[in-house]
Length: 222
Image (cartoon, rainbow, N blue to C red; front, side, top):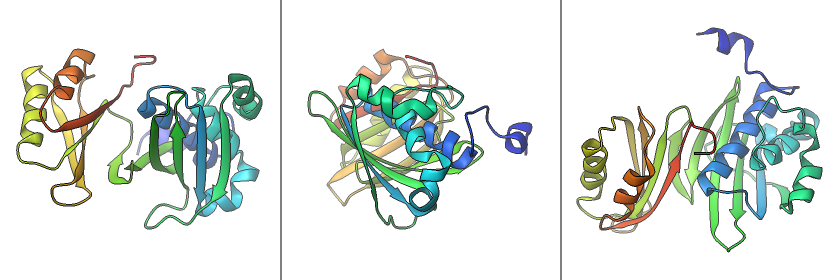
């Protein structure tokens, strides 16, 4: 346990789980989408649904989608900021299976019609875990530079991707694999010790069997 675990994050209150964590979830969704969504449908589960209104969870999620940080004083004003930015959003309650009580599923669409779905949980102290991307199971925190590689489930994909990373001097901290079914869609979640440069991402995108590569960076606006 460190000091951050005891004191929690610097944030606009009232709750690190329901407010700071919710902002981080929204920020993660925006980062994975690669831009601010045009529309966002948010499906709240468990205590996010039952007590989120009183804890500012709804405003915090929208603040994150707009790119605000947990300590930004404008977090409570996120609805007005979203209207000004032209981002439409809606909230519904949904029971999600086998997830933490503080969870949400966010379905986003960009101006050009690209859609992405992300499910995440707020674990306390501002920490989060992304448990699904586009319906495929994941488990990552956003505390390390991360690649989400969506690919066809075929021999050689994993070795080719990790080979590109090794050739570019990037060390893999963890690798998770998930697939919808044999020979179908699959996803690799690769947490790295270093930021992954865009030219390396482009190399991976050009590999056989790769459908999409999403880069999550710890560097602001990178």
